[in-house]
Length: 176
View (cartoon, rainbow, N blue to C red):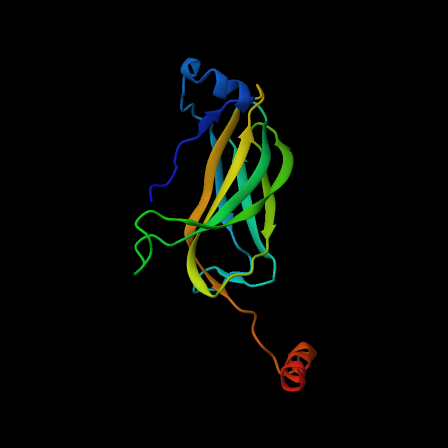
């Protein structure tokens, strides 16, 4: 899977753009914004997505533009891993993540940390987590930027003998 490295402009009115598809001049303007993504609860062995628990990503955004930019939306998806045994040749979307409307304006030369959380429930497996940010410049043009695309592991929550839910579940299975 090739990673998106450049930003590309998206028309503001997709319906109008669809009607005038022949008139669209697709460009890849440069938007001087650096975004690094981290997972504060990750382990040394990589990012683990624990079922039914929120996974938090922190996007550190540096606006190197001479005008303010806005982080409009952050979203993403979980894909089949590329090159895994038995995986399709082209990664397939397993689950789309709920996008979050952010609307945070970052001044020229400014830096901000933007949190993004999501919850999933899937069978334990290795997948590719793909996160994308929609950015808007001061003129209203919208740009996409891939901010994370790495392998992650979906895991079940650890079981503790001190967790009362474990006894409720075991009792229900025995008496049910």
